[in-house]
Length: 202
Image (cartoon, rainbow, N blue to C red; front, side):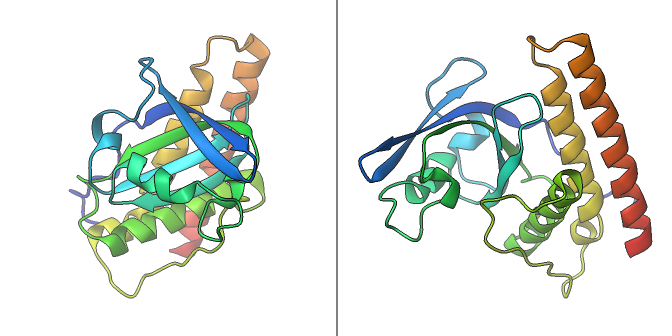
């Protein structure tokens, strides 16, 4: 790995995501941490992004990891709609409350292949953390036939994103001391395991 490779994404934007089901159609509502009822900042613009959807509880299971170069509004508009449409998100076919994190990777990856490799590594990290793949993910592909600094550093980038996710879990005001200890223990265990797996994969 090139020592100048940027492996630490900026902190993700966080949203409360509500999925509503009306008749045979699904809709979404988002609320940012600042209280805005729409996507803001880099989530509202074009650029390389990875986003993650998790259930909205203490250690919410991650149901989806995705990528887009479009604004999140554009991406989500095409992912919701009639539940008979095979192109909508599988996790969006029923009502629910989620946490949505959006990372801006524009300063880390330079093309779609690099973005897809980081996505694959993040999905793999989620698989290690939960012992199952994100439930709404239909497929994942590791594309290592093109080597670059970002691709070689992709497992480290993904591991840093998982650390950021745990830090966000810890920041919730309603957590007890026991809850914080559980999250910190889980974070420590998963990061060590991911580091060991990265060494084994060489």
